[in-house]
Length: 215
Image (cartoon, rainbow, N blue to C red; front, side):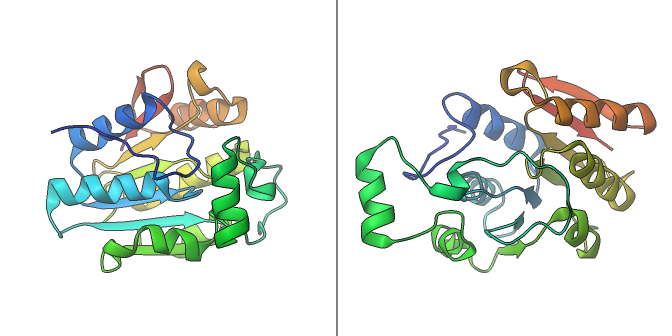
């Protein structure tokens, strides 16, 4: 299957080769019920849904959780992209198109819904802080999680513990971004390492960036 991670003229953290490496992990595990924590502008969500459709036809589900411009419920010191605040583009054409013509906030729930409109029947977008909302969601059928939401130690550990409590023993894959040196964030690395020490999980470092956990 051809791997072709597209940016859809939006901001994404998976630039260059990283998008295709991400798709490789999805292709390898072939999930049907997908959870993304940290939707950002929806680029990874759209690529994920496009790819899941290739693998599963219309028989797949995608859940995306993000603040979508809402306030954090916790007081944790999150590391958030400045782009969410000012929507600055290095490309002047993008700046004109999104900020002056469309006047569209790409991180808004409405904007992401529009990008995913062809998959309306397959998706659910949830606005909120995972420190609270993740505990309220039915996770039992999820078999792949892309974890790239709040990057504080507290939030990453909370997300992993909540996922583990619901999904342990189901061979669920958790692909955690910003763990390895290629996009290293200390809090993420520390939380993942501590979680691994405390729990029975399989661990693999993917391309010195992603932590892949299976439990």
